[in-house]
Length: 200
Image 1 (cartoon, rainbow, N blue to C red):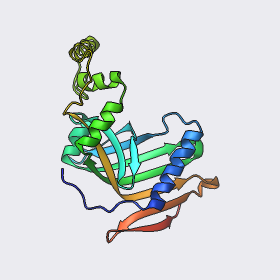
Image 2 (image 1 turned 180 degrees about the horizontal axis):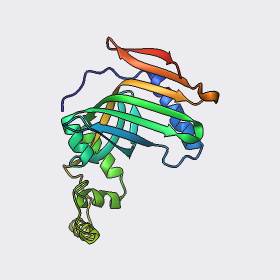
Image 3 (image 1 turned 90 degrees about the vertical axis):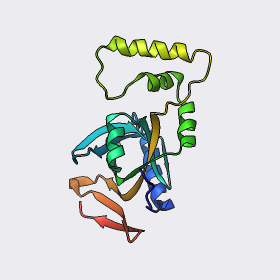
């Protein structure tokens, strides 16, 4: 997967997103960093699931996964993705269309090291998205990995890393009465961000 040439977000765009994320956290919304990630397979068929945002900066939005998982295989074929944040209690959405790029090994190592040890063990034990014959098989694999790394740090598996979604379109959606919602759209045109209002 090659790096895109998409320009970074503007500070104003990132601030608008972070302000919404802060409002969701302060409102006590469970898993306020949850986002719906849509990918496509090699036949162009879409698939969605919920993942957790782990970082957001001017370069985009970061999540982590097993590279051999269904989404990891999709991203190896097509980096085009969509993200949706839906904070129901605030009646706010953020819709993001962009391109997913692998994070650097240094960045992935740093985040992996910050995870709870049980999650680190799980990243080794789980053959994510593959068929599991019996729950006990997974538990046995966990026990095996725990024994392997007993008394020492758990390294990041090669098959586990992250992606940064670099947007080419962001829409901030704010619910209003009578469904006359406010929609503020930022879209790349000639490699520059353009801001427009959309009809609800």
